[in-house]
Image 1 (spheres, rainbow, N blue to C red):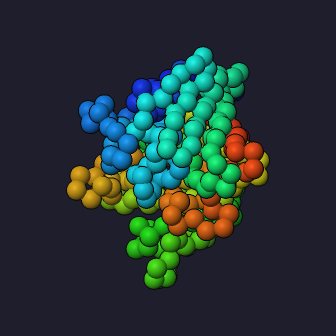
Image 2: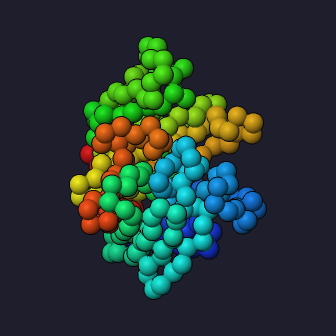
Length: 272
């Protein structure tokens, strides 16, 4: 049975989604930090949880992108942020079977970017992430000690098949073990199973590379004061850092000057 979803956003503080609730549970994890109130563009990322709009990069510079640290404006159902190189607008609506967010990024033709719906989820140790078996999956250097075989010196990522790329089982979140790894699945849809609850996250974008990123931090990050945070992140692009994006690894603005895409969140499983 499909369950309606309710959502809340905070335009004044970076456009962060602060709630995604299906009536039984709050899906978004939170980490209150008063420093978030006063951030300005160029500041290091302040992790308050929720769902962040990370664009034009996730890792790299600017840290978690250029939109999270700026105030957004709201006009009816549409929220908008003006950044130095682009404008991002989104229109979010509740539907009969979940939430639908339509995005528009306007920039000079040829502009390249990565976008992620950086959704940090409040999950139990028993939660699983389901996607099509065999999906090509990239893992990044922080995973090197956990993989079968050596890491290639200087490689930006290694690739294997979901759910265990290079021998690292990633579909189970599990208890804290002091590790933190990121991965990017070359698929536009994934589903979280947590007990009887389900959440499907999907992205569609004509002519652009889509993927779903996983951030599985089981008390391994940050090094100085680690905490647990687990994220499932629909993306445009196929890498975290725009600076390292090769051909086909980033979205590109066409001659029209606009890129359109859709994020869909559903409290049911629509994955294999």
